[in-house]
Image 1 (cartoon, rainbow over the protein chains, first blue to last red):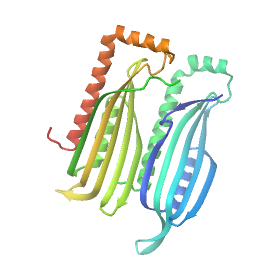
Image 2 (tube, helix red, strand yellow):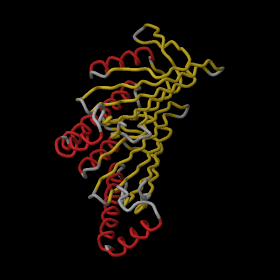
Image 3 (spheres, each protein chain N blue to C red):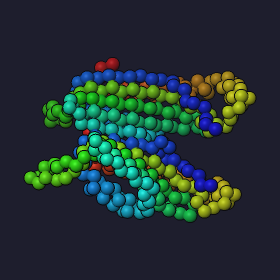
Image 4 (cartoon, each protein chain N blue to C red):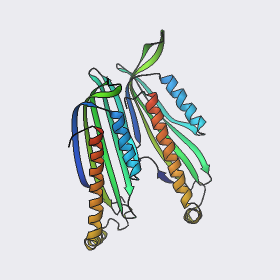
Length: 160
Length: 161
């Protein structure tokens, strides 16, 4: 069984925004970010409901990047959007279609350890060869996820 | 089996109404964590535009492994309401209400080496009694770091005491 080394809390880190957002542009940007950082994306589920107070949209991406044979970086992204309605926002004299509502993104990130190695060899490998690398990888993934959180805050135009 | 629950060593709360700079506050908190070698997360960053200004909530969680037995954990919750940007002498500031809660915790045996069975808990208790001086040192250090961070927060808000 694969072991996980979490670099975020297991319950994840969240960015929430209530206001206006260009959702299509945001999703395009996020896909580009993942591509640029060499993450392979999988959409695990997608659910959309129409309610009297706008759409509820929930979906999850599991993004993985093989660091080397025994280590895979994982960034799970949970999207939870509530009360989403289309609005037109005037920008530089043009009316741009955007979305208004509550947007929540949760990031859960960890290293999947020992992807293809039997337990005994994995233990030897980790103890004698890769101890330093594990710490290095955890630190690298932590920095990457933290920078993604900062960029999402920018895109959401968060107050702080 | 989970390790023993962290014990709260120090907690405090600040409420301020008026002018402050949330960005500076945020920066000073993260710098403090980095300087003190804590690994930290901004667990929540929430921003809502309301009728009476913005409402912002930021939760930090940070921890530092002191050794193989003890870990310091600091949690900070910031809730700012009725926020609006104002300019004062060419500086961008925030006007509104802010409430900050900080708690500094000590988690002993975070690797759960003693285990969870009653006998193991008894052994852990015995260990803590025998090494009372070391445990006290962890508690004092955790309290000191909590207070130091709390002072940094107060300085960031330009509070007097």
